[in-house]
Image 1 (cartoon, rainbow, N blue to C red):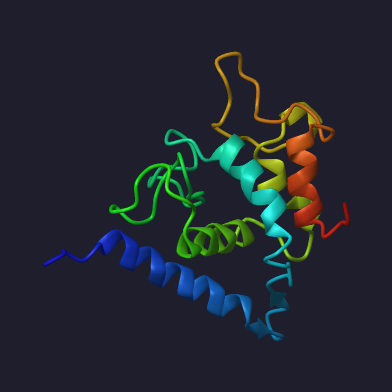
Image 2: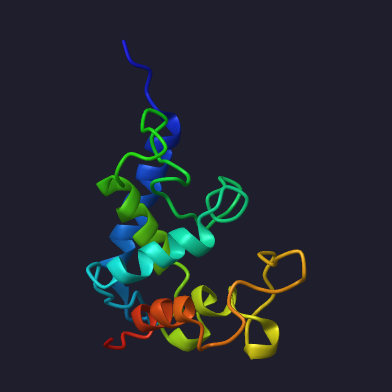
Length: 156
């Protein structure tokens, strides 16, 4: 008999809540989740995996924002490290990325500001290298531009 994966169940519950919120709008509070295409996330996801999804960064269970996938954190303990990304992993990563977007001011979103160097308009972030540099030095870094196109809903 296979034991239940409580981590996967808890993350599935979190994803369900996030995805339910995506479909909800509270007009009294003035809050709504932006209607960002899941398909558009297909460009941002590999960049987030490459630049942010390390086990010591956003592949860690200690982080609110996590990225799941091959060669990084896996959602199911039974999934091998380099198996293809699962639907649950990409859906959860999508929902967590959405949670890092400010719907009123997408340009101020933590998903854009946290990995950007302070001198380029970024926000404090523990993800610096041994020289104190952040993930993206400028808003012109290709990885940053890819994420920004999705967050800001800009065409390629």
